[in-house]
Image 1 (cartoon, rainbow, N blue to C red):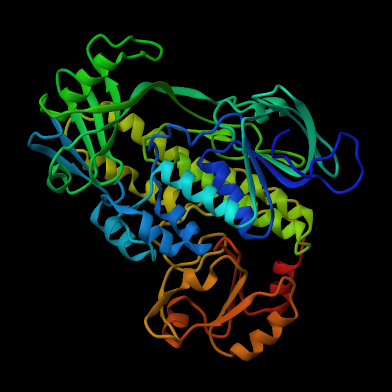
Image 2 (image 1 turned 90 degrees about the vertical axis):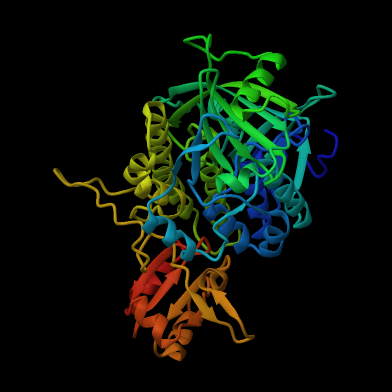
Amino acid sequence: MPGASGERAAGAAGPPDVPVLVVGAGPVGLATGMFLAHWGVGALVIDKRDPMAGAVPRASTSLRTLELFRSIGLKSTLEREGWDGGEPMRWVFKDSGLAATRHRGGLPPRYATWLESCTPVPVRRVLTHDQVQRLAQEELRRRGGRVRFGVRLVGLTPESDRVRARLVDADTGEEREITAGYLIGTDGAHSDVRRFLGVTMPDRTAAAHLNTAFFRADLGDAMADWGTHLCFVRNDAVHATLMSKNGRDQWSSHIMDFPGKPAAGPAELTEDATLALLRAAIGDPAIPIRLHAVHAWEAATGLASAFRRGRVFLAGDAAHVQSSAGGLGMNTGIQDGHNLAWKIAAVLHGQCAPALLDTYEPERRTAAQASLAVSRGLLQGYRSLSGDPNALYERLAADYVRGMLCYGYPPHDTEGHRPEPQDGATEHRPDPLDDTVRLGHRFPHRWLNSPEGGRRSTLDVIGSRWTLFTGADAPHWRAVAAGLRPTPHVHRLDAAHARELGLRDGAVLVRPDGFVAWCGTDEGSLRTALTPR
């Protein structure tokens, strides 16, 4: 197969041809490959087509996704490539994009204020779907990973020590088998990997049928008037959104309803019909519109019945699908890939036992459920919305912040299984704005004074490595850490931060993904928490 150097014939002995094969080169697959390469695992990412060809800016990044990119050294890239949109969940509601504002909607003030200070990432910073793809592909290759387009997966066989994957070259029809230590399916809502595994999505529910248009137009100072990059439009001709994709002249629009729309199934729109609806949404028929594409699609929600079969994993839309409401679908998938990448790397590098991978599904299923709750709640709310939207945002604010940034991972045993709740017990969901050290949650952001001058976030101290934060007696904890494998980086907090975060004589162990793995004062329990499983 062209470009697939180093591959063996079927049945050959020895190590797998590639450590990890990622099937699907959308933003989730390329980001997963990038994260693997960052941790020293040379993944091969394949796709039956080149998704970069003619790519349009669909989804946008969340704060948590940008934190993960920052954690692997991409801060300057985000500053260079990103652009500033509106605050998370900030919308205006109008009769048309250029008409007077009827309502302004957004998170309640205490949530909006908290988001301004909870992360080192500028709260308005945005990267679009196509920017993520380009960035991830460049970083993946720069860090030693490989990408092959025009290669389709036509079969897979999981084995105890590897996965056999049958690939076909789209140009020549040549079929070849390669072996991988692990295989990750990031091949979308209609995943071939999921189908080959026999995994279903039993709760998949069609939420809506939409047309999404991608276009260029000069709307002047519309964004300045809106105070955000997101606008809902409803008039007699169309019910749609207008969403800036670069802060200037690149736009997308979800066309949700219009006179004559079929009651069932996606409605294919001609170019002329699409342009007429966009002009009605904008509110000025004289503005030139350059239409790039319009897609008819079914917005659905659902979770796969399993995220893993042996050495094969599902991530992104292959594992969970959701509507665009809330904007968390791509982001949840990228975070799947990050969670899986550091764990596979730890196993392949001998730092942790393979049982660590058993934690992937319970953790990411919990995160996906939080993300889906936002999508379902917003979609249902938008359908019935007729006036001020802020009551809807007040009701769903906690779900949004939890699903976007503050989800917590469940406790699990050494096999990765979550304990069954006791009869009558209800799951406690803490306030997402409780920004203290909590087991199974993201370590809080705090600005620290840097020895080089200026300030540095606690999240930057962690980066992508095991980290032990201490209060008093740092030399003692350094000695303890030196005897652990993997050996965590030790960082002593000043007295004020140690007191604020609840550290005096104790310490907090943070995983490479920034989640709290242990906190306490007992050295023995720390060793147990970090013992390879």
